[in-house]
Amino acid sequence: MAGWIVVFFVLAVIGWAVVQRLGWIKIPDAAAKLRSGAILVDVRTPSEYRMSKVDGAYNVPLGEFSQTVETKGWSKDQQIVVYCASGNRSRAAIRQLTALGYPHVWNLGTVGRARQAAAELGGQDRATP
Image: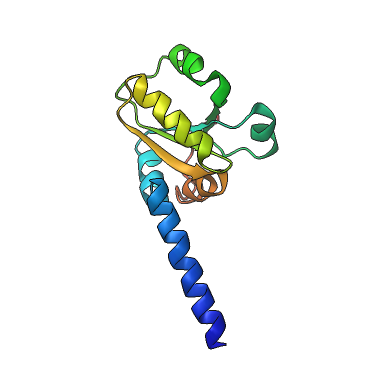
């Protein structure tokens, strides 16, 4: 039993370290930003998006990202929270948004974490784009 506790603790610490190293926003912080009007953006492919949507998320695939963001008409002051399947594409999207002049952008990482952040809104009504 003590061995399992040690294993669990080590895995928890490793998980925490990975999230810190990747620069992902904490789930409660992402939920707070969404609550205050941040845009939630899913950069997965349209087929991935259709298979598992997160309520209130815009689907802007990474391959079309820069061009599509420019057509959305989002203010440069808009807060934007981005996610994908693994966190890699969302990290690339953050770099693109920053290059386009959006300073208020955060990488939420994975779709699972996006689901958790949306759930923390506690039933707050968010329109699905």
